Image (cartoon, rainbow, N blue to C red; front, top):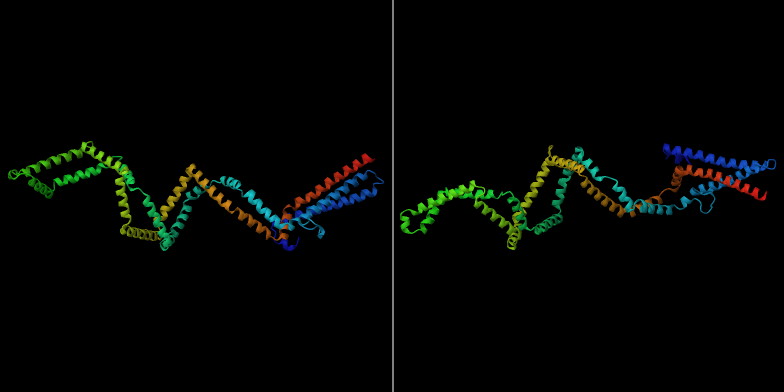
Length: 427
């Protein structure tokens, strides 16, 4: 390995390189030792016959070690630089390795089952809860939100198509709202605790005020006078009748005001209940309510009101975010912190959120995994194979060198066994 390549290695890589060189040297020395032992044993086996067993072991060990040296070297380069077929396997098959590696990762590491199983191990909901529950993080998020708010409002204002789209969608949703049943529900909520009796009390107060209104009484007296015969008017019967009417009316109003269970109040309850029931199911009421709704939506004043409301909202936002004690920032931060706390306390909500994360991220990985495989393949194709070969050899080469040791041991034992069999069979 050249000194240039060494300069790109870290301290750990240099340690691996030294260990690899040491293991290579020991393996080569062992191979040379087997050859020396074989030659020595062959030389003296005539004098010492038992050396034939040593020679058989050493010869087979040398052959096994040499064969495994060839196999290990053939993975990375051509042995002795000779153009032997099916050598330098890794450099020669770079493109095929790249494609197979990409497909392998796509099928095994990025499969839907594997990805979803791994994503399911992550509690995304708790991560979000912990993040939001920290006030400084929620404050940072709210600061970012209010900082981009003016730009978002400007973009919405300047985008006529978007504004028209929002307006049309809003109108479409309002058209779907059934006003009469909605009004019935609202009235039902109001009358649940007889709050409508407050309206009845107000009506009684108005009528009581009319009984003390001189102008109103004069008008009633004139009406009575026109209905009575002239002779009755001569005896001021109109004044008498008016006095009686006012007295009776005042007494009745006082009686109703003091008695919460008065028959008139009960009759008003029944009237309101009948009105709510009719409002909920009557086609006539429904038609009138829809006409009123469409008339209201078509009024130009409503459009002007929405424009003024929008300008008021924008002005408030722009003024508030520049304040050191921004109300929007404070409220948004408090809301985010509260969301984080509620999320941490609600395992069901976190489970639903986690399911959403797994589904969304799993779908994203599924749609992009072919691109990931292609990316990996292209990256491997673009690698410098000399550097890649050195990298692989550096990380697994020492283990491969032990194959040479194993080859010498297994080969030697095989050679010794064959030699022993030969002696037994042939003498």
